[in-house]
Image (cartoon, rainbow, N blue to C red):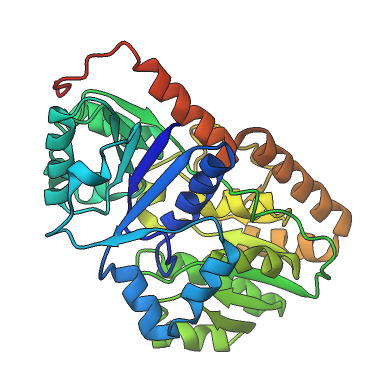
Length: 372
C-alpha cells in the first residue's frame, strides 16, 4: 500500500492558514484512493493556538465532524523519531512552514534511507519576499520541490536551491467545495479573506469596501486579523463582518450570496504572476460568480472574461458588481463557466494525479544526493 507521510503546519486549523484547505483536499483524495495517509503537525502550531485562543475547542470538534476520515499526529520536534514515523513511507511531503532544522533532519534521514521519495512543498511568496530565509533551507537530499506556481519553481532552479522542481498548483477540494443550489441567494456580496499585514489595504478599499458602499450592497466579510480601522470601514457599508469562517462552512456561505471578489495580495500581483492562491479555485468550484482585481493569469489556468470577470480599477469593479447584481443570466453564465473549468482541470483529484505522475517519473532516478 502506498504510504504518504506529510509534515505540515496544521491540518486541524485553517485560522490564517489557507494551506490547510489544500492539505485537507489532497489527503481526502488520497484516502479515497485507498492510500495510507499520515499527517504530522507540531505541537504549539501558531494557527491552532490562535484559533483555540479566539474560539475555544469548538472548531476542533467541528473539524473532526466535517472530516471524519482525517486526523493528524501532533509531535514535539525534540522527541520526533524519524526512523519510526518514516519506516514504511513511500512518499514524504514537507511543507515550507516547517523549521529549517526539521527540513534538514528529514533530508538527512532520506539520505540514509532511500526507500521513499521526498519533496519540499512551497505554497507561499517568501521565495520572492524573503529569499535569504528560503535559501537557508537545506534541500540537499530532497528529490525535488513542488512549487505552487511557475515563478516559484523557476526561482528554486535559478538560485540553485534545488536540482529539480515542478509546478504543483493548489486546487479545489470538490468533495467540500461544490454548488448548493438548494440555498437561496439572499445577499449581494461576500468576501472571504484575511486583512493581513497591510500588503493590500489600499486594494481592499478600492476593490471591495468603496464599491460596496457606493452601490449600497448588502453581504458579508469573513476573515481574521482585521484592525480597528478596517472594522470601521466595513461598518461604513451595508456589509456585515462575520469574523473567522472554517473552510468547510464556506460553500454554504457562497451559496447565500450573488457574487464574490478576489483581491490578490501585493506580493502576488507584483512578483508572482500566475499564482492566484486557493480562493478563486474554491469560489468557482462552488458556482458563485467571481470578479477579480488586477491579476495576471500568466499560466493560463482560467479564461478571463468567461470564468471570472477581470477589472482594472475601482470604477470597473463597480460596473462588474452592478452587472452581476442586476443580470441573473449573466451571473449564471460566469458561474457555470468557472465551475466547468475547475472540474475539468483544477480539483484535488487532478493534483493527486500530477503528484503521482511526478513520483513515477523518478522511478529510475538516483536515490543518493541530488543537489546540484
